[in-house]
Length: 204
Image (cartoon, rainbow, N blue to C red):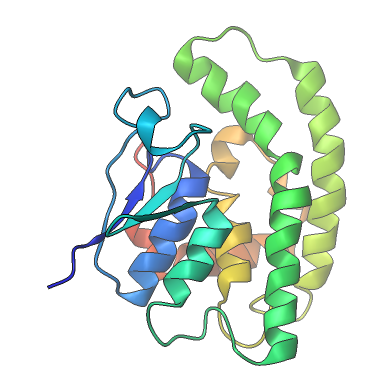
């Protein structure tokens, strides 16, 4: 009997939540050792000290979107479609998520959520305001992409939705202005209602 796949990292992190949600959606046998990069036992596992880290019987890869793709190779599914154009669109959103979407909210998350939790000082509203400009641009792009659509690619959820929606895990605590984006709000409600997301909702 194969050992469970381990997705290592604190589940509070939206980047850890991404592959965990996908694993649950696919019905894979998965464990989540909730290690932090600050934990001494984690440091030998990953030279760069980043989470999440996947360990599949000694095979290790990092980067949340790469882990999601790897998980999809483990069982037949529609999250990472085989049809060339559909897969191309999914890949487009996965790269957009890393290059543009995450930088458009992560500094806000650090300032408004992480710093107060860890006692790292006051929120730097200058950083927040500068990042909100980026967020408005990327949210407008996502809002337009969702016009008349339930999901980003095709008629069912794909890795594109898991990647982008995971970024809104802490949208309330970050006080992101989602009221300006009705398509995003409706889509995010659908995404957060998926079984994988429901099983990985972080406990504050």
